[in-house]
Length: 331
Image 1 (cartoon, rainbow, N blue to C red):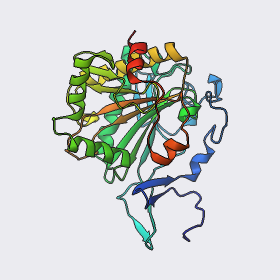
Image 2: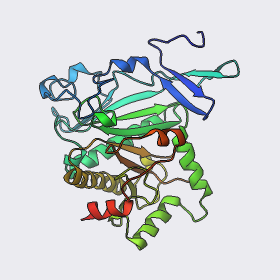
Image 3: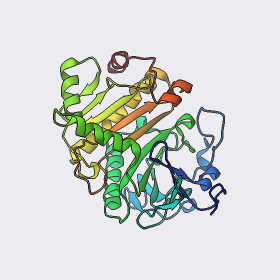
Image 4: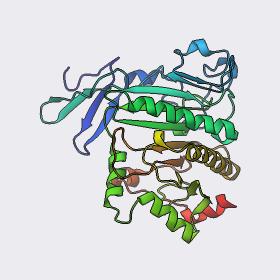
């Protein structure tokens, strides 16, 4: 393949030599509903009758990898993504096309978690049983990824609203198993190694418990914080109090507590701001790693546009102090 020739039908990783980070070129995902839309409200598939994630439309999707629920009815399904960014088995094979261009096949796993049969719900509407089921499904699929050759890291996400990247309204998440450790995790792992006071997240929870200014919810199982370093308005950090590196090794009580705490925080966020778009991103240790880490989730509401300074420098400008966020959301 020539260096500048467009690729079609084959997903590819390309290395950015300026940053050392990999970029995924996945032209097939441009076929997803809502791509290139300029309306940043919510996805357009509002009619449950035309939604492939709704009960009765199971045949419109690939066969389920996991199904949770009673016989004849499902409460949660995991299916292969019809528009995968990563697919195919095998180790990462990097090919260097001279000193500047490096590429690799975008091998890996791309799955969709249909979080509930209810078309018009969101994570904020899930009951305790359903939030526990979602977290159990994440654990089960991460465990499967960890046992898969070539998968070094798995990224679990939930996008709510078009501004957050959701292509469908029906509540769903995605789980991507990839053949490398992404730059964001590399930076977080470096932060854990730099910190000299034990576990960085454990220390943060303890310090915020003492300070009290940025605590939204905190008990013996889970902490919901407006972090000191919040880069966007209403950013949240949700973490189990129990020290655990891998999400798929987490204590069941931690999983349930994090799922429920996310639900409660998102409900408060909706009560305050309306049905805003947001991203939930789970960070866990890379597979087969025993580096210092503490799994957690980031919630990033899409209520503020990113300008040229932020893009050019990587330095966020946050117009709402986390102390005020905690006051608003903690009630």
